[in-house]
Length: 317
Ligand SMILES: NC(=O)c1ccc[n+]([C@@H]2O[C@H](COP(=O)([O-])OP(=O)(O)OC[C@H]3O[C@@H](n4cnc5c(N)ncnc54)[C@H](OP(=O)(O)O)[C@@H]3O)[C@@H](O)[C@H]2O)c1
Image 1: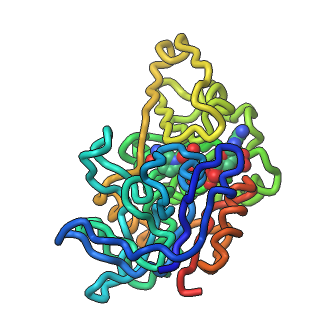
Image 2: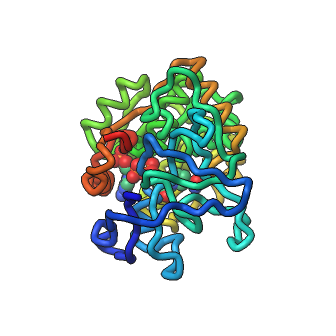
């Protein structure tokens, strides 16, 4: 089958490590696994990390990339694929598709049947394919970890990214006052169109916030700390711009801040997210939809850093 995969690692030029071509069909691990015909998938920063050799080992190469998919199961049901798989070989006890098991940038992907979540009626495959990683991560950061129900105001850093645009859209749909930073004036305009107040990185907010959504890391963390109200939750799920920010511990204890890690979400949280999107008529923020045959262009788009929202692959084209 046709697939996009990491053939090797390249720290500086991850796109040079991307290969496209024929790979063997995925082999279901045991009778509880099924093969899904992929109709749409979406890219995540995770795929670029994989091409750089972060989270993947040489022994796993070649590895089909991709965490997100929506498609059709062997019984003809339209499904969204939850990408986290129990994995005793991994220190976390779990792995994400494309780490230890072949990913979704292929005609077919094998997953445990329990990982299939029904596609809500009327939701396009290309919308659904945005939700299982970036949107689920944002959902868990806001709800389970950030306790947004107890918040009035939310700050989202690096707001052009896949997780960040999801956090902006979901926090706005939850009725909160939302502030979002982006380095790019064009992205700031688009953030305003989503219903948030857009700011330059580091700008003083008109008020302190109860929840901060952090995926940028070292470049924005000091601003996140300074923007936090007493008792605020600073929720971290990524560090695109560096893992080692300086942290003023005095501010942490004096303001009684919570700095919380968050990763992905549960199948139940994915079902809740799908239901929320349907009920509040929230549609994923999509930067570009490429045909599957244009997967290399899609990767170049993600790597450009110019994206606003998700880069999606339509596997029917
Ligand atoms: N733990 C998990 O479960 C989980 C799940 C998904 C993602 N992640 C992580 O979260 C991060 C974001 O993922 P994504 O897929 O949303 O990535 P993405 O779509 O590539 O977005 C990254 C965003 O970070 C901002 N950024 C990058 N470099 C920056 C810098 N030097 N200064 C300020 N802002 C910068 C940019 O925002 P602007 O251009 O708007 O400034 C960019 O749009 C990644 O590190 C990823 O690995 C973790």
